[in-house]
Amino acid sequence: MQLSPVVAIHMTAALAAVVTGPVALWARQGVRQRPRLHRAFGYAWVTFMLVTAISALFIRDTSLPNIGGYTPIHLLVPVTLFSLFGAFWQLAHGDIRGHSSTMRRLYVAACVVAGGFTLLPQRYLGQMVWGQVGQLGPILRGTPGWVWLLLAGLVVLGASQMRDRTQGLLRVSLTPVAMFAFSLWAATSAFARSPVVGEALWLWTLAMAGATALFALAGTTARYDAAARVFHLRGSGVPLVLFIGIFLARYIVNVRLAIHPGLLHDATFVLPVATLYGAFSGIFLGRAVQLWRLALRPSAVAAAA
Image 1: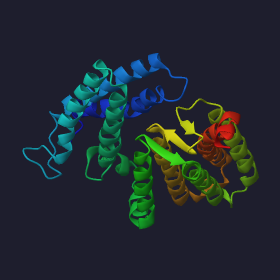
Image 2 (image 1 turned 180 degrees about the vertical axis):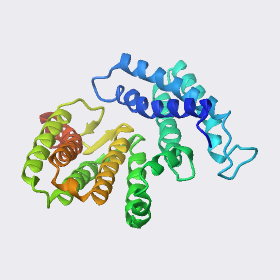
Image 3 (image 1 turned 90 degrees about the vertical axis):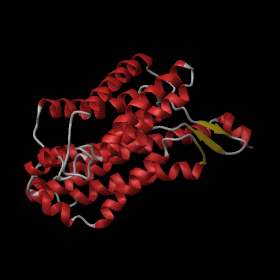
């Protein structure tokens, strides 16, 4: 497949949709919502999705099973159009929760899942990415199977948190604490032999503490039923983005170190990555603290007594 103007427009719009979607979703999360930001990025995302879907109609692909150049991935075109229509129909009829749920599902299906398929080696974007890093082929082939199983598990876990649910304190604590531990392990295992490991751990700690405080003090849409000792949690796409983010950070860092082992001695590489890992750890821990604060409020403790 050649980079024709239609393909260029399609790729540009798709990448823009991947970036703007999480902002639109995030702007409606928490107690302090940002309706103007949500509308601005929401309309931008819808526009990018429409351009992506319509331009896909003019793109043929014979590298996959197809009928007249239309592959199974093209089925996302009607799915996208009908989902957008349905989401705005729900919005017009006051079904805000249904509107939000439809948009979240569409983002996962069209941007995350379909976007992942575009990185296959036989796809144009995949050829661009993997062609520029020829050394990556052997690394991908040598990646243990458990790594891909871990990614699949994280995607399933993140997707499960996109629906409303009711959970106890132990269960809601398991995921953020486990991801905190995963981020800490990623940092220590990657840089344990670095000569700047001390500085890296300091930066990791500072970033972790700052992110924990920031997210712990932020508002939350969760509600705690003290009598039943359960949390009522609204669905959100944020955990899925965070799970994939920490996985990609870990994987990319390991790939870079495998290709260029000398980076382990480069402070300009080690220290920013350690800070990133610390921020991820703090985000996960901060989200757990948000819920613990709800359960430990005096009113909640009194009601449970």
